[in-house]
Image 1: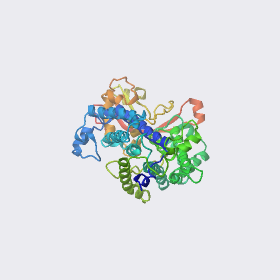
Image 2: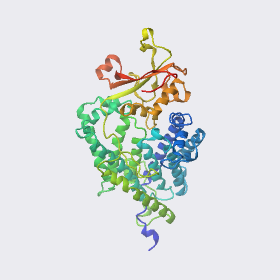
Image 3: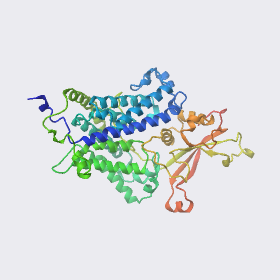
Image 4: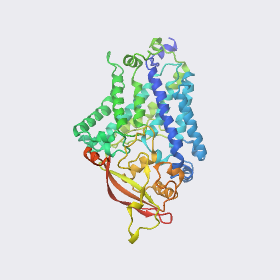
Amino acid sequence: MPWQDWFGWFDATDYEIAREVLQRGVAALALVAFVSTLNQFRPLLGEHGLLPVPELLNATGGRLRGPSVFRWGYTDRRLVAVATTGIVLAASVVLGLPQLGPPWLPLVVLLALWLLYLSIVNVGQTFYGFGWEMLLCEALFTVAFLGSQQVPPPLLVLIAVQWLVFRLEFGAGMIKIRGGREWRDLTALMYHHETQPMPGPLSRQAHLLPPWFHRGEVIGNHFAQLVVPFLLFVPWIGPVPVGAIAAAVVILTQLWLIATGNFAWLNWITVVLAAAAIPDTVWHAVIPAIPASSWAGSGADVTTSPPWWIAVVLAASALLLVLSWWPLRNLVARRQLMNASFNRWMLANAYGAFGTVTKRRIEIVVEGTLARSPGDGGAELDEDWHEYAFKGKPGDVRAVPRQWAPYHLRLDWLMWFLPLGRMWEPWFEVFLLRLLEADAATLRLLARDPFDGAPPARVRVRAYRYRFATHREYRASRVRWVRTLEGEVLAPASLGSPVED
């Protein structure tokens, strides 16, 4: 029997469109991630950043949690080179250029993107400590083995992507069921739209929907995350494309999250990855203008992939299968880990989000003043103080929250975490010092500097309770947020005084 007959199962001839969506979509999000890094890494983590990478390397002796090209030394110039290279390589995949060549060409390009972004994440510290960072790394590695247009998409790699979506969705569902009571009594989404890290332009409208709708949202979420993921692995039952329908449910729920919040590329990449379960036949039936697969007539009993390529894919699939033991065990563990990597390469990770939902929104507001001493009688005059405006974090009560995702505003996200844990973080102290110095790179991370580049004499930090304005409150005063002062986090401090809580 010819060797081609032994591997007739290897080619997924009806998933050419899925491959295009997966490779180009993941590369597009990698492009966004590298642009975000180019714009924000240096003021956050660069040589003069809030958490400088050179200090990390000195403290650890170069022993990082995983591989990184910065292990042998970091400079801002080297960071720019890495990010720029990532942008160029990602753009080439988005344009489909490597896919025109032999199957090893997109493999090399996407693996290079994986290693470059892994290098950044492994020195990114708390600013790169989000689950979607390791998710992007794993996705880049996995879709690299989908090959080029010269070979059919490998079935094993599509299954690996489906397994990734399963861990994303089912892991998040299990975290919620095991987490806060609000997910079990169906009240979680009565709070979430208001208290999520970075609301979007439609978040207030979603929050003001009636309670019965929010309970329905939670029920729909549980169904989409705890039931639907199992159906991704069932391509067809008779004439019914079960896997494609399951993927559609995942996509629709993720589009709702995209419309009502800003979660970087988490929801966007889930939409892209879900395409792994949609065959070309379904695409063509839904959109007749989409042509049928060019591989459809090649037969299912004989492979057209070369033996070396089959060997490469089998090796990668075996690696992912072995590494999957740890996230699988985590899914059924009593103490399930959320957003955890079990190896240095950030492959076969555990995912999950919002096991508990915050009930009250506390915002940290940073203010500055040009006055070098308190007002008459020793009293502080509030009119002398002016707020620093962030790009995505709520501040101005009249402003409409902007849509930023899939772009990731790292400083704004960490500002949300401050009141949830330790109110004082090392990077936050340095951030306040940079404001007192009117550091230009730091100020570019903000939406507005109230002093137009001049250094303030003092800064202070206050905590406010924020809630969305009701329809009546908005009609009366045109405010979208209502805020009340909770207290002072930091008394007025200057460069000559210690900045501490």
